[in-house]
Length: 245
Image (cartoon, rainbow, N blue to C red; front, top):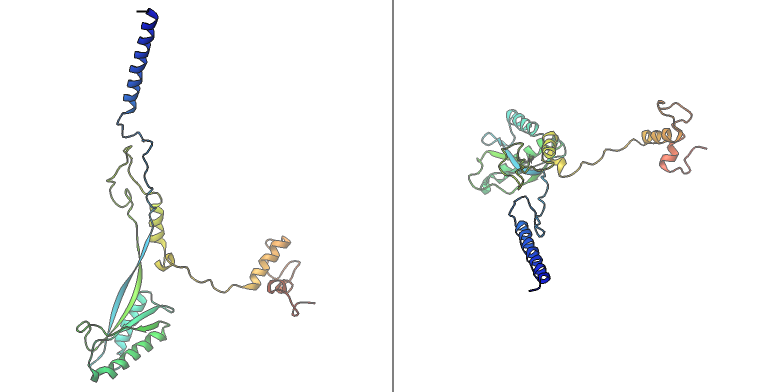
């Protein structure tokens, strides 16, 4: 056999063995290695949840009475104050199931309670009669809805860390602490669901701020400086025949 051919064959065999060794090394099952086709959907960020729960207060009437006593009226006012139910809020009135002979009395009781609520700026809607036995015959129930913030679960913050990733690091939700802090600071959980309407703006004050910005008169008090208040009001409202001459 030609020595030259033998050397070439030996070189090819060595190269094949080296390639097999490299392939074996690439087949390592190291959990830290990420395969080409491996992909995982990112978990959604933690978010606060606002839930509405009903809370009820029973107004008791004396037998045969159609108006609540002063004590019951005070107890209902205390219930509204404790639940922060003020002007602009809405409650539901519920009456007990009764026979035809007691319909007029129940209507008068509902009207009396509704009048007390509307005096405090609370709007009222009527609910169907309660199920038999749910209310005493001499009671009327006031039902309100209160919003509560439900905080997300944050591993490592409010519970022990029990899950780890492939590198031994704890799985912690980014931004979870910020969400919890927001839920603890918010005064009205309903603000997390919908915003409040803005109050009417002061047009004169807004016009003065624009005028000061244009003239560069920073630090001057209102009504002082090179421009008067009346000179900028027509500009703020669009001018017209009623402007200064």
